[in-house]
Image (tube, rainbow, N blue to C red):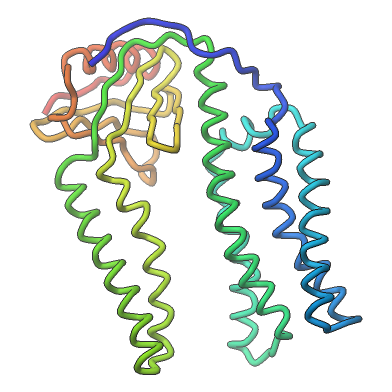
Length: 291
């Protein structure tokens, strides 16, 4: 395990979002707004070619306008990445699909174009919201650790029994989703087709086997995953525990997931514990405990 002290970065919270971020965020906004315009056009023309070209045109227009506005909003990416509510961006694209489905269940028949738009919005929103959340989190982390002092770092996976649970759940999700699709297509079991949604869970579960890098700084704890970086200040923690299997860092709030790390993966446990003793005692005045 490397133990060192250094300063990190010089990103200001007031910087404007970069071009890539502005484009992804603008595209996300366009995917949400374009169906409204297309529904309006569909009241005048139901020609498929016109609607398709109109959709592409409004996507380009809204992306350009929203992207320009976002690129000129200083600190937007950092502010969004700071809040856990940013995950609502992932949920919003599902709202039209749920609304169309709910309407059909209560006897209201939405126009066919609305069903198509709801599905496109759900799929497009899912593929843009997840990168947008990740980019926002990463930019917030970069800003948060700028000019902080790093005390130590280590790498570690989830504890073994947590990984085993994740593997089991991942296998169930893949098999259940595949079986549902087969039952729906081959045997005509309509409700089974909904089981494909289980496939959504395999990707995050598969990540449980990946090592994470933990960086202890004087300002907070940074957790680096292959694509996502998270920063949490020390006031967000209450203490830690260490046993033969895992190092667990406890977060405030019973609903929040504690940070767990396989003890065998930590190269220098003593240095990690010494760092946690220092920063948590200073910032939370909460006693750690050894099991």
